[in-house]
Length: 78
Image 1 (cartoon, helix red, strand yellow):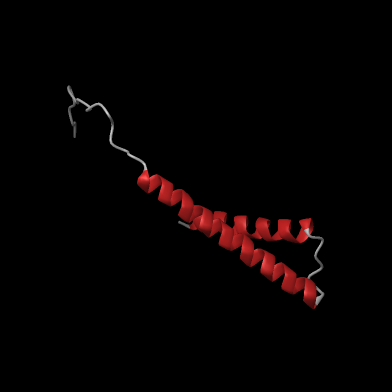
Image 2: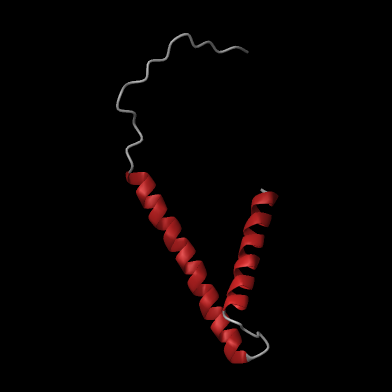
């Protein structure tokens, strides 16, 4: 669980650094700090929107096989 949290944290930090560098922002200035906040919030919102869209497509997909699967010669060993 710690690895997942660390991965998410690194992803968010790298995203913030990319926003700062791509928009040539200097976070010392208040107006550029506000711009960063708006861009970062927009980026996070787009991530959640994309996750929601992908989840919707996945749930609508027919995951049942067209041909029935016949299982034979299966043994469960202890």
